[in-house]
Length: 302
Image 1 (cartoon, rainbow, N blue to C red):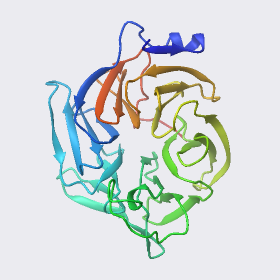
Image 2: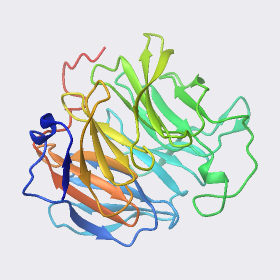
Image 3: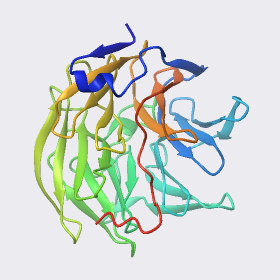
């Protein structure tokens, strides 16, 4: 079965006649999909192969976007349509400008190098939030083996003016992250916790976090990267596919995928196509729901 319907509300979210389609295979660990609506293409990372790939919707073709790529992992698109990337190998967060040049957003905190920035999200106020587990320095497979310079794995925020600060310090391995639709809450997964889970934080006007209760616990493998649809449901990676969570954390159902899933992204002209990075492959499936309109005019998220 392609869909595991655990709550009748999930039945209205999926097209049960459509199964996930494999768009590409040949990665070692596919991660970090980011959709560019203006160009109708998707960029994602193949971390161990040290490359970023690009899938073009009009032609269905795949090519190399960048190689080497600093063992890139998570990616997102900022309000100006620029690619923001976490790089394991370079231990930094960087932005690809419209002319193709690279701007380093942050590569250290108080003089100490990051572990290996993993996933990133940009808030509508221009602040950049990212997680920094140590996966990229634990071996040479996803980055470069090195001793950590920080005493633990943090969640960071880069202010619009450029200052970097810690916003959460009690994770084992902070990983995927996303804001609620109104940006009043930040969701962060912990792949190092046993069992893996997603926590929910309240976001204050000054960017500080409070709360952090566990919203949902994975029933299969680890929660890694995730995205929200336009009603606030969370579509998250897991060991047996993509799990759909109600905003209150209830597991509504699952999209079964034949490989362990790392991350997802909404895209396509109608934002109703869910792209899935799963181990060696890129998949997609059309849903009955859509991703949110990001950076819409007069969109008052706060």
